[in-house]
Structure formats: structure tokens, C-alpha cells
Amino acid sequence: MVEHAGPPVNKVTPTVIQVAFAQGLMLGGSLIVAIGAQNAFVLRQGLARRQVALVATICFLCDAGLIALGALGLGEVIAGSAVLRRATAWGGAAFIAAYGLRALWRVRRSEALVVAGAAEPRAAAVAAQALAFSLLNPHVYLDTVVLIGSIAAQVPDDARAWFALGAVCASALWFYGLAYGATRLAPLFRKPVAWRVLDAVIGVVMLAIAVGLVASGGR
Image 1: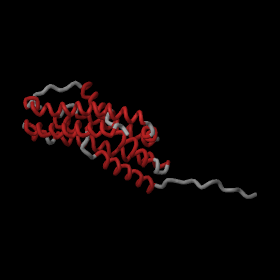
Image 2: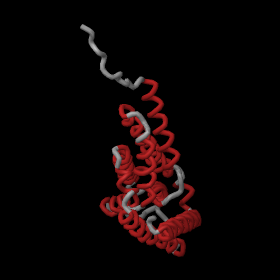
Image 3: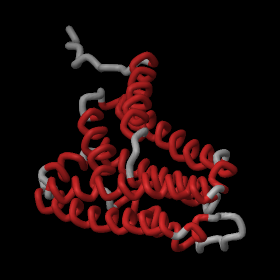
Image 4: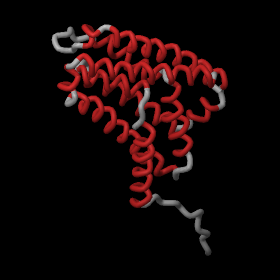
């Protein structure tokens, strides 16, 4: 009696896993290392040494969750919904523009730029801001859910989780590195002029992002 062999089983080798992890790590790093609303917020909190661990952890967990959703296919849903894209674009633009205007206002108030002796902000307020920058910015969804998700779809099923894990590791390295690395620059920012320059840059970047979102209209 002749037994017919079943379909060949595609086994993912350690090499494929390593390549998938490295691809996710490099892609995640290339997307997250850019001047943006979320990174500017993390940088300023790190420089001020205010709720640093909380901010870095919230931003990382949100990023990791969105990367996981993208790897599971949510990117296709967002890309196919014009209403959802438009809502996130306008909502994100409003929030980012408000923060940008606030940063520019701080440039005029030198006495508010001195961090030493300032009261520690409430964790709930800082957490709310970190969540807003992580979830109300459409660029975050474009990078983590749509772009990473679309590339993850091309990775073999058994290696897709390793690809996503690589991108998640890049997110962890970036947010914690940015937040705690910024604390080493704190002595430089004891001078009000340094805070003025930083807030001016943040304000301009935020407004530019907001204008870009409004111009695109969530298309």
C-alpha cells in the first residue's frame, strides 16, 4: 500500500526568525527616530525630569499595542476608511496645534522656563498628555499600524511575531533612551534661553504638523 505524502510543511528556521526580527527592529527604528509631536513631548519631559518613567512607559506601551494591531491586519481597516482617517486627522491637528501654541507662549515667559524648584506635575495630567500624543496623532497610526502592518503582512506567518517584536524593541529602546538620555542635558537647560530655543522649535514643529494634517484632510 502506497502512502501519499501530505503537503510540505514550511518550517521557519532560526535564520528566518533572526532576519524577521532584524527587519522589524530596523524598520521600527527608522520610523520612530524623527522629530514629531510625540518625541518632542517625551524630550521636554525628560529635560525637565518630570514623570520620566511614566511618560516613556505610556508611549512605549501605546506604540507596542499599535504595532501588534498592525501586524494583525488593522492597517487595512484604517487605510480603507475615509471617515476614520478624516476624524483622526482633524482631531489630531487640533490637539497638536494647541500644544504648539502653548510652547510658543512659553517662549515669552522666561520665568516659567526654569525647572528647578518647580512643583512636580500630577501623574494623571502627564499620563493624559502622553496618551493624547500617542493616540491622537494620525502619523502614529500611519507608521505603526499601516506601514509596519503592511510590511508585516509580507513576512511568513510563523515569523511575523518576531518581526513585530523587533519593531517593539526599537520602540522601547527609543522612548526610554530619549527620555532618560534627555535628563543628562538638563544642566544645559538651566539657562532660560535654552528653554526658549527648545520651545520655539517645538512650537514650530507642532504647528507645521497640524497644518499638514489639515491640508491633507485625512485623505
